[in-house]
Image 1 (cartoon, rainbow, N blue to C red):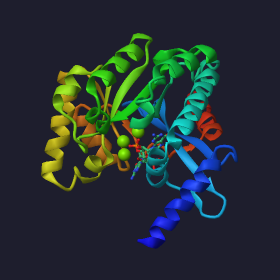
Image 2: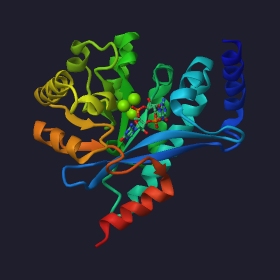
Image 3: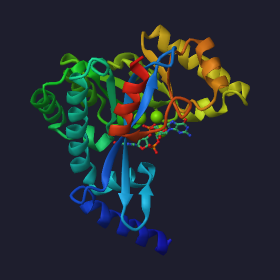
Image 4: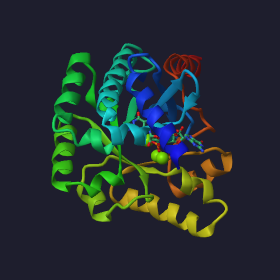
Length: 264
Ligand code: C2E
Ligand code: MG
Ligand code: MG
Ligand code: MG
């Protein structure tokens, strides 16, 4: 326990200077359609620690949240993402791609979050329609009125919302119907189990049907095997993300792959 607390305190201290030392990086993972054509990407944060090597966001995002560092990091992610979209807007092959970014609860709850994001969209001159915010069900445990207001303000300017890790948290189906989501993401845990467990397959089927009847687009995460893609396709899920199509890679590498895929 003491050892754990020590390691955590050290990570928090190091995370404080990670931004200024350029140790954080956004990686991009492709999202593809039914023909395996890239339609967008999810931005996933990576931390290269000078002594410990790559540290998973699953490990350091909670620390960033608890310490409040997520605000500074979140601002940086917004800038980086807008810059990616600005450079994509200049290429015929990339102009229509969407970029999904993960927004943590604490970041979204900042009173000036909407202003900050709108300001960045304007400054970079990007099309807000190409930006998608992934939020999780945990956000809906907070003051739902405020969350709803912010979501509406942002959808007004064209920003889209995806509900991430759907079905793994504490969401109320009522919120799913009432909040302006465009996309529902099926969590990797469901995809991993669905071919081995009948009950999970039923849940996946129900989620896809629910999304369809609520007019939401649906994307499956963690697709690693052709059989998983096939199964999801048959159930009516036609957008995928996972190692089968591509791992998260550095932005330059992602952009090069796109060019290779799109040019004959
Ligand atoms: P998430 O948003 O649900 O991201 C999907 C996770 O699944 C990513 O883990 C991704 O690398 C992983 N993944 C993608 N394809 C596959 C696959 O085929 N198989 C398996 N087993 N996994 C796959 P990652 O990058 O470690 O991120 C973990 C979580 O950390 C994310 O879950 C997200 O909640 C959080 N996170 C990552 N980047 C950011 C960020 O910029 N801001 C915030 N607030 N949270 C972030
Ligand atoms: Mg996500
Ligand atoms: Mg997810
Ligand atoms: Mg997840």
